[in-house]
Structures are given as structure tokens and as C-alpha cells.
Length: 431
Ligand code: HSE
Image (cartoon, rainbow, N blue to C red; front, side):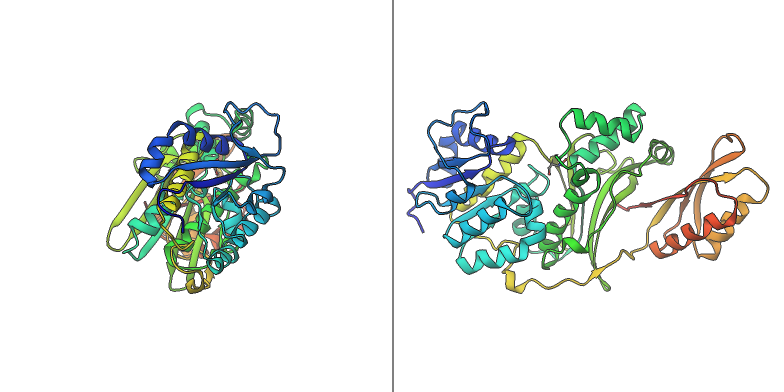
């Protein structure tokens, strides 16, 4: 290992929003970082697809290389900072080559870790190197360090969170402006909030990558993105947002992971949460992660989940950690000791929100009540709205029941002949 006064030399791959944010912090806070790390932190070489782009930062002091993989083999680079993104291709090649060449790696790449995390962790440990990725989950929120360090003495019971700012922006904007999904989706696109492939955001995939990484750390299991039950926000309508609000709830794209006797449940889906809860009050592009430990109880972390400053702040925390000589196993414990999780479909009971449109005729509601009763589903609250052209919109909040019972009821209800349109069910998560 380097002597304490030896500079830590970085090769930065990717000069998009986050990469430039990292360069700016290193330039602006050089003294502060050196004092905290006990040694200077320097950028040696950089790489980006387009050299000519105006990046609003002075890059003249750094060597440009043509390919990110060139950074991985340079003698004068100790840490490769991978900010390219993507779960295959150049990002993966660069990371693997860096580890094989004795470099530590700092990355913001949640997709790569969610899909290849175990192999990369084993590779890093075989090479005696570290991979740090605070920026990969919930941007500026220090959730990885909170879980691997501050909560290391706890058995984690449950991790959940809103971890895609774009979806939270869309859902809260639909509510505040009373606009339909399609209109707000287009607004988000114009504002540049959406990933190049928007299904990563609105399809719940980006948030599921993050959830899978947190699950691994929380439960000491191999990262298992394939085991996440994923539903995005595309089917959330302004009607449901308004009706849920009437009943005292907000709709959030919520990730929940918990270890049960049946296995590891990981779910990303639109859920109702109480409007007055911390999650219910989360507005705009902000993220929130809730961690429950047996000793500590509940921890709530809230902050910016994306953007230049917040994400670069997280990257710098990893760089300083490495500069200080702190060596952390990738997922909080040696990769060989991570258990293979048994994926389980969600079975933990919850209350459910049902929105049905009934034919406005005698006995319609009785038929619905019979289906629910026969399925062992008990009604907690119910509200019927103004009748429109022979149809009666009805909202039901159930007592706690199993997802299986709800799925069955959703299959049977359309066969009663009294439901018009698609019945909607959304889980109500206790927070
Ligand atoms: N598209 C992501 C979000 C960016 O909206 O949260 C950070 O992963």
C-alpha cells in the first residue's frame, strides 16, 4: 500500500454529469480532501466518448485516453472511477481489467452491480482490490455506508424505499397538477429527467437494480436482481392518485425487501402509503430509504437521488474511503460467504386498495362483497362516488389479506357480470 503522503491517483472514465461533478469537487476542495484523506487526491487521466464537448470544467491538466480500458492498465492510476454506465460492454470491460491490473474501482453503476455483482465481487477479492459504489443507490444519500458500517451490528428486518426520482417526480406532479400520466411523462422527457431508455425509470428497472444491491447487503445474500418482482408506474392513473388521496394515501413506486421463512421477498411496485408518513410526504425527484434493524429500529434517510452534486458527493466519499486505506468487502461481507437466496413471491399480508366500476343496478355491490367474503377478504372501508351514465365507481380498502387472495379475487370479480372496466388493486404498505 502507498505511504500516507503519496497521492491517490485517479483515472476517470465517463465525463457526463456525474464525472464532471467529481472533477469539479476535486478541483474546488483539493485541500479539504487532502486533509481528510491524509494524502492528496489527484486526477491523472480521463476518458469520454466526445472530447470536443464543452464541459464547463478545466480538463487541461489531465491526460486524455482514447478508451476507458486504457485507464485500467496505466501505471499512474491507482483507482479507476467508472462513470460510463450500462451492464455490459465498455463499463464492465473497464472494471474487470482495472481489478485484474491491481486497481481499486469506484462506480455509480447500479445495473452492472445488480446483474454481475457477485462475479465482480469475487474478482475484486481474488485480486485484493475493492469496488465501492455509494453513488449507485439513491444518489447522494449515504445508504451503502449506513448499512455496511453504521448498522453492521443489526440483523436487518426490512429495507424499503423510493429510489427512482423520475418516477416520484411523475407521480407527485400528476397529483399536484391533476394531469394524466402521459402528459407528465412527456414533461419529464422535456426536462431531461428520463434515462435514454425510459423503461429503466418508469418500468421500475432502475429502482429494482438499487433494491437488489441493498438486499444483498441487508441479508448477506448474493445480489439477485432476477428475484425482484417488478411493476412500473405505467398503469397508475390520475383517478387512482385522486381516489387514494381521498382515502388518506399517496401512491409511490416503492421497493420492499425482506427475508421471510419462505425466502427473500423483493418487490418493486406502485403502492399506497399513508399521506402523513415520511414516504407519503416525499415530493418531486427526492429519494428516501427506510431501513429497519433489530437493535436500531427504523432509520429514514432522505435526499437527492440524482444530479451532478449529490451523485458526485457519493463518489467522493468512496474515493476518500480508499485514500484513507479503508478496505470494505463489496457487499459488506466476503463474497464467498454470501448465501444464494431463495427468491420468494410476496406473501406477507397487507391491506389493499381496490377500485372497481360497478354497473349501477340492484345487487351489484352484494356480488362484489360475496366474492371478497368467499375469498376470506374483509372490507375495512368503502366509498361510492357519484354515478356516471349507469356506472358507480367504488373504492374499497381491505383489512390485511394475502396477495394470493387478492389475485384470486381480481380473477373472479370480472366474472360476476357487474364490473365494467378493469378492476384496479394496489397494495397498501405499512411504513
Ligand atoms: N433515473 C434515475 C432516477 C437516476 O430518476 O432516479 C439515478 O439512478
